[in-house]
Image (cartoon, rainbow, N blue to C red):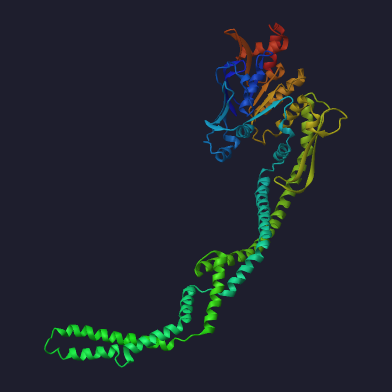
Amino acid sequence: MIQKLLIKNYAIIEELEIDFSTGLTIITGETGAGKSILLGALGLIMGNRADTKSLYQDDKKCIIEAYFEVKKYKVKAFFEDHEIDYDDEVIVRRELTPSGKSRAFINDTPVNLKMLQQLSGSLIDLHQQFDTLDIHNVSFQLRMIDALADNGELLGKYQTIYKKYNSSKKYLQDLLRRSREADKESDFLNFQLQEFNEVVLVAGELGKMETEITQLNNAEEIKKTLGATFRQLSESENSVISQLEEIGMALGNLRKVYPDLEKIMERFDGSLLEIQEVASDFEKIAEETEYDGERIQEIQSRLDMIYKLQNKHHVKTVEELLEIQEDIQSRVGAFADLSSEIEKTEKDIAKFETQCAKLAQQLSKKRKSVVPSFEKKVQKLLVLLGMEHAQLKIEIADLEELSPTGKDDVNYLFAPNKGSQFLPIKGIASGGELSRLTLATKSLVASAIPLPTLIFDEIDTGISGDTALKMGGILHDLANQHQVVSITHSPQVAVKADQHYFVFKKVKDDKTVTSVRLLTPDERVRAIATMLSGSPPSKSAIKNAKELLQFS
């Protein structure tokens, strides 16, 4: 509910403050005193656009601030979604600078007009003649029917499953898109994978093959050089080893006369043994080395295949090729997984669709069951409101597909006069008729829907006497469930107020300004009497006003 409205430097308002209570607040006043200006200020709070013509003093900033108690309106998710600090008391502020710059704030956090409209639409329900009222809105029409049918729990269950159904359908579309793309890519990947499978890569093999082919290509040189080296070291007439053996024998005779040679001779003997082993290795390699043209061709063929893959995939090692092969294999495997995932998702969709269809049928049955009674009750209220022949007809048709609210297409049709054709509300109802129809329907669902603050602007236009008194009664009854504010010219409506504000003009510093004050009981009598007879009110009007207040 709205708790307070502060207005500074707006239109012909220099500064004023209005405190709102629960129940029914009535606003009356002199013609042209500025009642519509109050609604204009509220419109800015609701996200309407403004311009510098709205400034009372064009060199000062205009500020409009509204305080709301929002605990019961379940708007916490809005604050979380937009990262705004939440509190049960919310302050909405609009500022308009002399330069024309407009700014909006929610709890001192700057917001854009779209965000402001989203929040304020949940907090204020402003009804003016010729406005587009939410009774035009199909979703609100359905919301009223569901409230009367007590469909809250059932609808919540349906919507939980519908979300799964809808998200599964979207997921399936994504899977099918990926599958189509996979079909295009699959042949190419399989071709690449076949190339890898034909080569059968082995980690570390490239270096070994490159070494082996180098040795085979130089086999004759290796055999010739190592063979000759072996002979020079070991088999020739004056080989290196035989000479070293002779030297060893000569030095051995000195061991007895020069004992310090013992350690040196040990090193000598070790070196001789090492040379003998080296010579033996040279001999072995020379004997084993043979030129093998067939093996060279075999290795070169495999190397060419590997080099071709490396060039194709822009890598330099077999290990990198193996990683690419693994990735291709994984992607090809994912295509198979995609098919099984599509099949699973299609089964999920069918399951959720069956569950939704069953719940939608239950919702529809309950909705249709309350329509006749609702239509009759609305008609009775319209009669009370001076629309004797007006009728509301609610059509519920089947949708072809599931929707977020089931399979019902709800349409409110209205016939304002006797013999009138039933047509959609927006195209047939006048402003006054629409306001009264809105009052009638909302008063019937008030206990079932957490409506925002309801503000009615002169919905009593064109009615008077007993009809106006009954309208006031309906407003008062509605205010037992929700905060209601009504701007009225009707004394029969005004007497139903829980609090009564009076808007008036006065001259200050040679300028006309609007002010507002909360009326005392005595002031209410005089204000209502004035509405009955004019100013100054007659004694009979004052008496009549007292009687109206007494029995209100």
